[in-house]
Image (cartoon, rainbow, N blue to C red; front, side, top):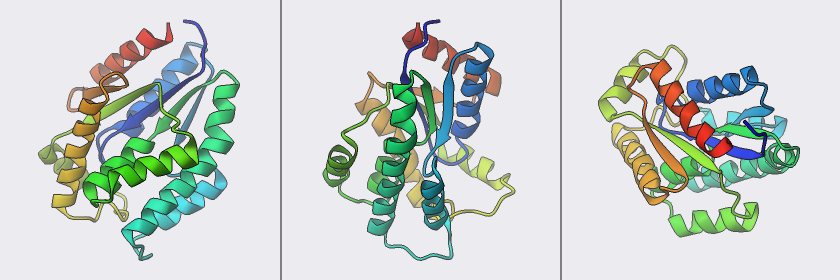
Length: 208
């Protein structure tokens, strides 16, 4: 497998498995001696992680437009200080959430204007786009079952209404349908091993 700089993102609603499978792909790359970086959003730098704390804190009231701006502030720090330098050093960057999450949560979930969100991405981030995005899908019933097993305190987004999360789940499916050249939809209700093997296989197609 030839080493080349690639930007790979994992997307999906809470408990879809994106964090688990981004880690599994990263571990697989390391086992195959491929230079890779695993990161996440919001976060990825010290400053961006501080913004993440504010964004997810249920005790901090934020207008949905303020949330959007904070997501972009975090992303600017992340892209400029982590993602771009890593790609310039010929690394494969694996990111748990990126711009598609902003569309799913802020546009489809909260109803903010899509053209404005895309304009911000273009003006502030030069339209940086992943080479490949894995969108891990679960239906709403599966989502509820998995969230019921969660043992940590729910964050700002996890405490929103069922209707909101239905919109987000549907939004990710729409994003995948609109971007077939970049997005691969994965049914994450399959076994963890089968899902990982499928992801590794699809990754190898563009990395070879």
